[in-house]
Length: 246
Image 1 (tube, rainbow, N blue to C red):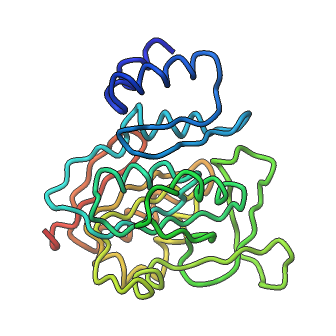
Image 2: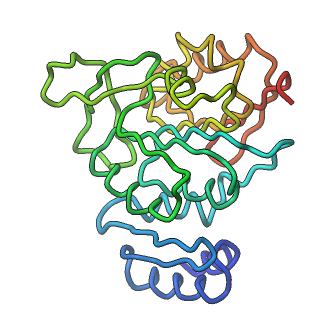
């Protein structure tokens, strides 16, 4: 935990960083107020929330230099909303849509993004079309829920939205940042139905889960190579920048 002291100071400032450090040293959950963000962050007990908190704020995995100022951000697989809050703080003028299929995680998104009215929250999965899904591994960690397509009549069905439909509903001509951490569903998202939104997306941060959905990485690169994207790796994410939209 000592190795997290400096990252906490960097992320939240000296006073709050020290307070968070002491709290996390003795307790892995609870409510944290950040004066820098002017927001409260809530971490659940016995969940993977602390791991997500570490990824977003301490590992700084979305601290990526871009050659433009993002105005539209889609956070696909928003989990408990920490990445959305990070984006809202960093890009104060951006319109953000946070999408998460898990109802329990979605309740946490509402708490963790309460200070950011520019974040629209949608309880749904990200898919290649508007459809219905079910979570197939409900007993796994709450940051690793996998989904598959289902009928609307299934009592466990949750709605799914396509990236194209989100863009049109929001009136976005482009997506400036598309963040995808969707536990293998990136395979379906990049396999079909991408022809509208992909050439209109400036930057993509995507975590690939080939171990969860075989062929996910191949689907991403097969779709991406149809367009003029640069490529890099940052922490667990593949980073693609659309050179045609710069």
